[in-house]
Length: 227
Image (cartoon, rainbow, N blue to C red; front, side, top):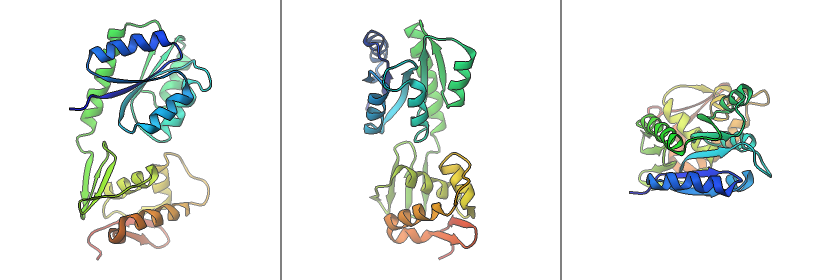
């Protein structure tokens, strides 16, 4: 069985080694980054990272910027490490979607316990992560899509879009609602930008693309009944 992969990001090599040693001792695989830019490169090269331990104060790009960038693409659990312990920093972290906030100095054993607790919670939340509709199977945790047993390659947004359609099978979804869910923010521009993404998604789905129905004047729905 593959080991759970954790990314540790800190500009202090001594701190990275301390954290890594305790994680490896507990059977985790550890990737390391010494700054924010390197952290993002590693994150996007490794889609199976299960959790990120992220220092706030770093050169090139600080932890807040890294967190914000990752959160625009992924809900991977993030533990923030900081030398500061101000309430304002903690609030900023939670507003950005940080799962845990640990102030330095800390006990490595406590850090590992927090990691294990978050991963247990994440695993419980992934029970219903495989969705199957009309020959389309989407695995949210593995980020894989198969159509009639054949893998199809989707971009991040195309994957999220298809997942949203499948989770709401048979329900008419407005363009605004789709954008708010898939892009995670209120969209105040031309909501028909969604049409471009739907067109690309349908094309990659081949004949199954016809399951995504256009609701004229409103948006779309995925339905296997309206053949």
